[in-house]
Length: 319
Image 1 (cartoon, rainbow, N blue to C red):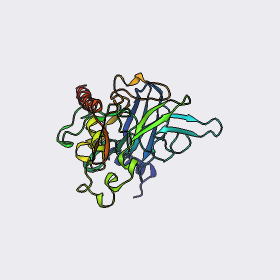
Image 2: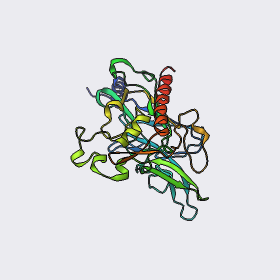
Image 3: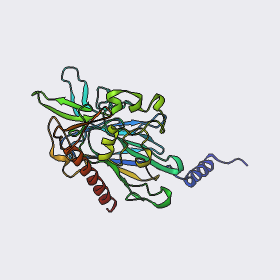
């Protein structure tokens, strides 16, 4: 007997209701820096685009972006941005995506930039996320999972790796001289606004984990990557830093991303933003295997930064 179209439609609707819903995530971005930042967002290859690829986020402001199920991509903060009055071109001193507009339109961040990286609903039904300094650093960043399991793990489903991660301290002032990115203001004064990776600075296979160094057995941490790791122990410091830097949560939760999460990070403003934490070094340097690194006060403050990070993340886990 022939079935009427209405009956078929009702059956189809019932089947859809019985199917498990595709879970999405919400990213809430908050700017705790003492200046405006311009978040950039890039979807991975083969991943549905987000509703925005870039926007302005004033000091103290928050914004939410919804991501579809199985989304992957990265987010970062652009700083020292302006629109040229003559050409109308929008550019940023750090994290610029080269699109010429506030929207990045499918372009990624020019290094150095602190990156938040996500793969939602990945292997084993888990979200994978990290904060990466592999492409260098421009401002502090913190990711905190929200919802089930988001404050310290959800048991065996993620092996206790559902927890906050990030880099809470300023590394620009303490950055080794040959990695430091300086910006000059209209008055002629300037300061450090970003810290390059050794790969970006020197381009050698040893630092870029390429060629003969393209595997975890031959590409090892350098004293440069250790500078980042000592200050930010949960962040990626080089390409094969997976074991201590990749975190997982059960799919279906949301994530809070805070730029300049330190309680004192908002004290800097103006043309040369620097988040608080590690202050400029006293100029004492050492050479280890041809690599110039800050020592003395800088090393002490990097260790202090590591302690502050761990204490802050522990406090977040108790909320």
